[in-house]
Amino acid sequence: MHKGWYEAALTRELSPVTAPEALWERIQNPRPRVQPNVNATFLRACATLACIAVVLSVVWLRPSRQEIRSADTVAVRTWVRANTGVDVPLSSHLPAELKLTGARLVNGRAEIAYLVSGRVCRAIRQPAPAKHAFALSCTNPDDLKVACALCHIG
Image 1 (spheres, rainbow, N blue to C red):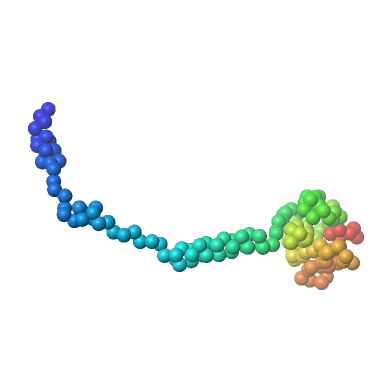
Image 2 (tube, rainbow, N blue to C red; image 1 turned 180 degrees about the vertical axis):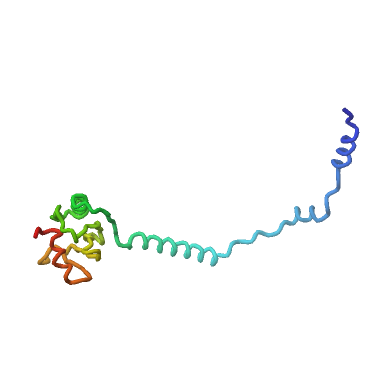
């Protein structure tokens, strides 16, 4: 192999050069460092704290909500008892027009969801001193008679 052609190129390209005059001036007299603006730093800190406060308030203040979706009365009864401590006497033999769909917790109170002839209804657990343990919520008043069969036979 002949080494002559690239040796000449390397010698030509890697030969010493003189530095520009401005380089020595920049080394001798560097630019003064700009101190960060105290107001800008304070505003960034305030904005960061405000964002953290918003995130924490959303996480801690949102209502607690859990749910189970099941048509099995034993599963729903067990879930409500485990999450609220209330034993709901759900009937295992529901009428044909009544279908259990699940339950959910809203702010520590149980809401049992069901359908009566395809219409959505809810049995909402009342606070302790209430006359009745659950309030029934249905769109059709006639569904209230069927809704009692959710817990009561007959």
